[in-house]
Amino acid sequence: MRASVPASFQPRGGNGAGPERVQGVTVVEVLVTLAIILIVSAVALPLTDRMRQEGKVRGAAYAIATRCGWLRIASVHRGARVAMRLTPSGASWTAQSFVDGDWDGVLSADIASGRDPAIDQPLDVRQWGVEFGFAAGCPLIDGSAVPAGASPVRLGTSRMLVFTPDGASSGGSLYLRGAAGTAAYAVVILAATGRSRLLRCAAGSTTWIEQ
Image (cartoon, rainbow, N blue to C red; front, side, top):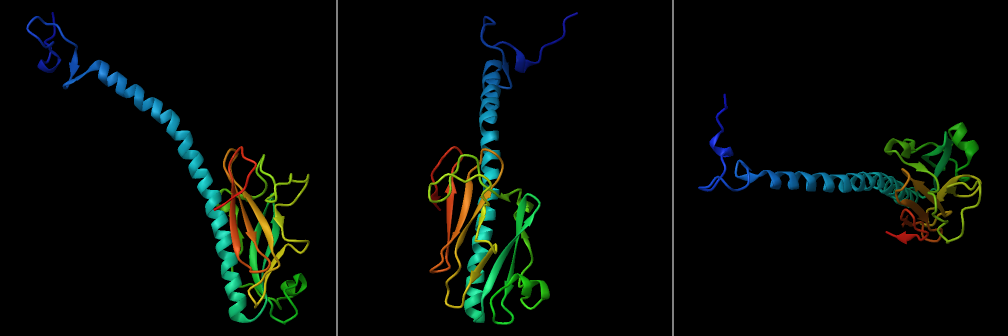
């Protein structure tokens, strides 16, 4: 017994010749379209994920630079020294800011005693899947190779970035990295002006480019 064939599947043409069609589209066209979708998806999905991962690093770098800008303004407004201290936390670092409460500079001992109080909450960039660190292949911002065991928090031995009421700072640089294969970022704080610059080192590159 032969089943009846819907009219939409009937061959076109008086002699029964012509390609088989599904809802007005040939089977070949459907297969070609599906193949194109699969190919585009295979190419686009890794690229999209890489862009998303880099966006996390860029966002963290902007967050640090924005905080530095706010601290510079806070120091000028308060007429007192303000410092962002980086504290080791596991494989990365956390940042928190303090104000000079007894007019002798922001000191670790005064922070511990409460004489130099905190003015913000600790910032941990790992909440974005980012950490302070050097990306593979990227040099220091001056183009030199990263020394073995070097710290990505390059603020001197105190690990504090100090802003002064005249708008200047102690200066330094902070290196941020994300997932392997994504661009790295560096936040550079200028000593003379206290302003921040944002640099990017693309994956596989050895050059930093200002953003």
